[in-house]
Image 1 (tube, rainbow over the protein chains, first blue to last red):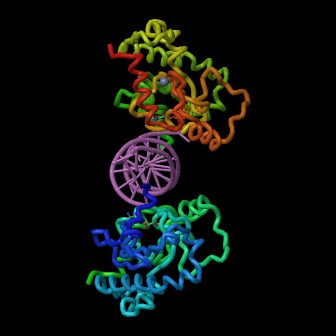
Image 2: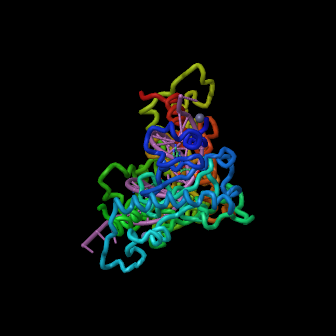
Image 3: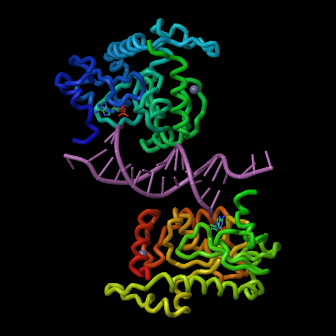
Length: 217
Length: 217
DNA sequence: TATTCCGATAGTGAC
DNA sequence: GTCACTATCGGAATGAG
Ligand SMILES: Nc1ncnc2c1ncn2[C@@H]1O[C@H](COP(=O)(O)O)[C@@H](O)[C@H]1O
Ligand SMILES: Nc1ncnc2c1ncn2[C@@H]1O[C@H](COP(=O)(O)O)[C@@H](O)[C@H]1O
Ligand SMILES: [Zn+2]
Ligand SMILES: [Zn+2]
């Protein structure tokens, strides 16, 4: 079986997985920790119906789908919020007047609005349908290159709220990858600073950004 | 002073150079060992007249110039021939029927015809006018990239015998560089095998080629 | 088409 | 998609009273 089916077991037999990858499953979905998380907290929601699992996200996610899975999305979001509440404190510093961070760990709606993204990759690599639910820190040793970062911080990522696309054209897979993953500049998701193609500099900067806002409890 | 003038001292004050870089000088020229030789033997002839030294080789090398410096070219060639005679023997092998190598270290004319190239780079980096006199083995640790190799093995290198150009157009510096140094495939100068852009493979192959033809005395 | 350092980009093979 | 490895390609600094 090829690597494109690396998620298949989580769909067909979540109960057989021995490690702590699977955090929830029922007849409709499995919710798992991404094995190569690109942020502090990175979950995947995998519909278990084979027909759905085989489908392309931009083709299959419609109002009915969203209604059916909305509660699982909220579940995953809650998991991320709790994880941050338990692990981190917000740092208060004089030179950071940005009110975005005030009480973010006490106000779930604010946390979600500012710090969680839910959606799909416009060109998924894994064959089994999955929805990313990820914190917007991108503070992770698994974030190793431009493609990783831009897959969550450009139009390559399609938000749950922007689905369904209602026939909006996306271009070919190759065009999408070139435009968003290769050619698109690296923009810091905290401060919008442009790092051009300097991934190493962005990595160092993300480390600073994260540590300026969060500290371990 | 910038790196473009790294050769200046050899022009103005060869007598002050302490190491063995300068192998000859008089009022008209300095002949030096290239400090980053791209072959076993790589010499530079530097006219010492300031007016000449400041000039671009394709603009200043005419019949009169060639006549004036021909004897120095021959001197440099002799130096290379003697160097090979003293250091190497030609290997005789059954599977190498190529007569190019027969007696090449005993017949200077043949050696020069087949194994020495004299000329200039169409876009020199060093500001002081210099003529390359180099053995055609390209067996050197200083030969480190495609640019190095192609600068001696494509139209980027203009042979002494092809000068003056008599108004032949060369394109802009940038065009020359793109065509000959970046885009031009790597071709083995011994057997013409095409190495595309695989410089590392070419390096290993050049090592084999050299060792198949030469051995230390 | 100076050198050197560093990093971005690209292709490979993985049972 | 991952990782490890190799190699190609690309920019920046280069000095110094
Ligand atoms: N074996 C695996 N187990 C869990 N997650 C994986 C595995 N292999 C890859 N992933 C993740 O699956 C996601 C697939 O993303 P994509 O197909 O681009 O939407 C990536 O975030 C990978 O890190
Ligand atoms: N400091 C130096 N002393 C002697 N030769 C040098 C020095 N720096 C560079 N070179 C050589 O000068 C040559 C300049 O070649 P080019 O300007 O391309 O015709 C190259 O072959 C270099 O290896
Ligand atoms: Zn930032
Ligand atoms: Zn060859």
